[in-house]
Amino acid sequence: MAPTPTPPAQPDDTPASYVGLDADEAERRARVRGWSTVRALPPGSIITLEYLAGRLNFEVEGGRVIRCWPG
Image 1 (cartoon, rainbow, N blue to C red):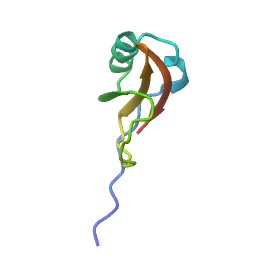
Image 2 (image 1 turned 180 degrees about the vertical axis):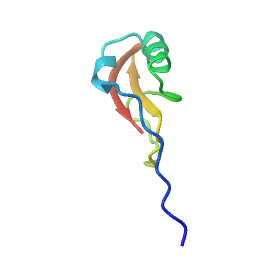
Image 3 (image 1 turned 90 degrees about the vertical axis):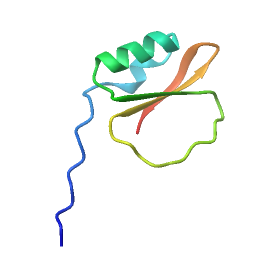
């Protein structure tokens, strides 16, 4: 049986630090801090629940991040 692969490490970052930022600025900061994928979503979006290491999700309303979570 093959060994279970080790997922890549996520950036050492605090997702809550993006809340309140302009969405474009938040995305720029996230990429500089090492997030490989940044996804901006409108409130109430229907999304799949698969976890993707290295992805940061933003819930954006009125051009501002109102919620942020990894995966």
